[in-house]
Image (tube, rainbow over all chains, first blue to last red; front, side):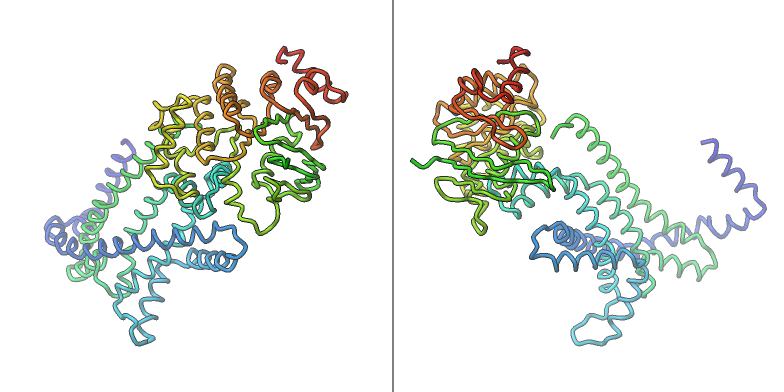
Length: 251
Length: 248
């Protein structure tokens, strides 16, 4: 608290403060721009809602492929490992640029040219690589004796995964999973680099029209309105899980 | 008559350490065989091999005369005929007691939900667990968990049960309830192989006791002989600890 008020005092008394206040904290502009930006934000919401659904499915498939033990599935294992290495290693921004400009440029019959479509594809590919590792960590965290127990009942390895390993593994990684989704919601702003006018891009347009940065602040508050509740939810889940594993230590 | 289970010349190594060395053992139908020996003598490994959880290096394991270690056999189908209960219970923590018991019959045997639930309720009732069927495993005592674990195996209607030191992880006052369940299984005619440290119990329940040391069967025979009057010095030495601790 002391640190914050000290910082605030330092900023407000700085020689540049009157200029900064004018260009970042213009109350009227804040009020007029926030509606526009909120409208543009619906595109961000649409992008992450669609992307999240596909990310969940794709990342789970990749995690399952990587956790498989059958020798026959070796090619699948290799392929998914290469995919994860590749997409975890490239900045999401570059993936968006490559897909957003590259794919439509091919002018292939039947290939969509909508930049939003390719932005979603890029985010799904980029994030699934991360999220699949989260799922894999969850799967690996289930003790070997649980598998032995399920197999000894005559369950196949697929049934063991489906009814015994996955339900336990997924439950354990819900908090880190939500964490990645919070990150994704912010990263939707990257989509603007290939054209679509989402919240951050709308703020930029307003800013350059008025020679004033207040609109960025407006965009920031809109993002916070979504990410803070989700952050709180994640924290709450972590605490609840810790409490539950505290009293339910022995599995 | 063909024994229910016939183990012949089984070898198993982990790395270059032989855990089972030329183990042979017959188990007649309805008989209870107790395998005794110190920790690391190979008792658990032997049971895990019978259940095909561990592949053996050499030898054969015959169930009703058929070698179940032959490659290409349906391991899942064979495991359904052999129940195993582990020292650490290994119940599924995310499922209720009843769902723990019905999982095998429903998924591995293809029973309907109602059919599996009816069987589960009947078994849980028989072993004094009816009141706990909606509880989660970690809400139960160790003894209750182990009884659920036995019921879970029984629900598969196995022809043979393997019990791997099922009382070793329990507080002393909870051992009795689990042993009582095993006694009841014996009375119902179940064929069982027990790895156990409960010598007094083994003497009462076993048709045959076999002493495993360093992966080899040193001595086997009726409980009165092996536990009361062992011929091998190594067996005598092992049993002395139990006699001194007044546990035999």
